[in-house]
Length: 275
Image 1: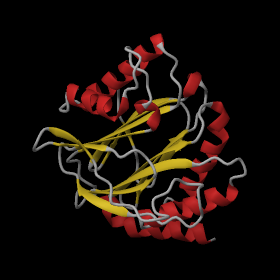
Image 2 (image 1 turned 180 degrees about the vertical axis):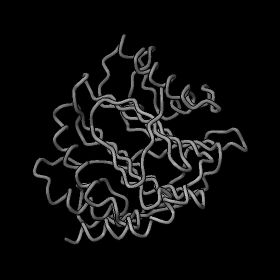
Image 3 (image 1 turned 90 degrees about the vertical axis):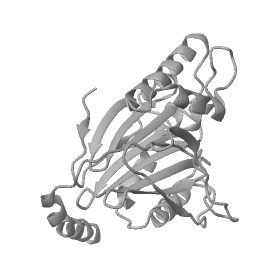
């Protein structure tokens, strides 16, 4: 699959079926989404953005309660909120804005889990903000090991799914993300997947799949998990939307032109928002 170039200041997202790859300064991205029952749109929402000089890449996954076409309209409204607030500097403030408006706008008692990965290429740091979403896995090139990312301890009314209360606060935390490291995020439809033996795949099963695939060739990770989903579908009903996000740290440099234009692009975005 030929990767797409996610240009500086470009945004991309939706809730439709997709199998796409992108190249960014500092990160290669693979994204797969499969709405329930082969619907045109589902309850999982994905969103990618390239900010300023391309130094910051933001990657969001969200999962609306419910699935398939019945959750599609809510997923689209959540995508629009992501687009509206994506230029918030701090990830936790981005989530606070989205949650506040999502909660106010909801009249159908739905909620949504979400996770944001914000990658700053110059320092090779990945900042994570979580709203009740399953924790991601990270692969370290130096140890050749996959581990589940341990999320910070939550206080009351903190890191709640969108739509529960307007007053939830969100933490953000930072991890190193250097050349060859991998990050894998998913919606809970993958953990709930029925395997060929009739048991749920679960967190342990996801980690086993990750360890089985060749981490030096990330496309094989996605291929293996998609094959597992398709094999399950032949014997069992797939009961939820499923979305997957795989990211690899690369060594692609930011262009001098993009670095020089960064302040003007940010100012233009700010002025457009204020007008």
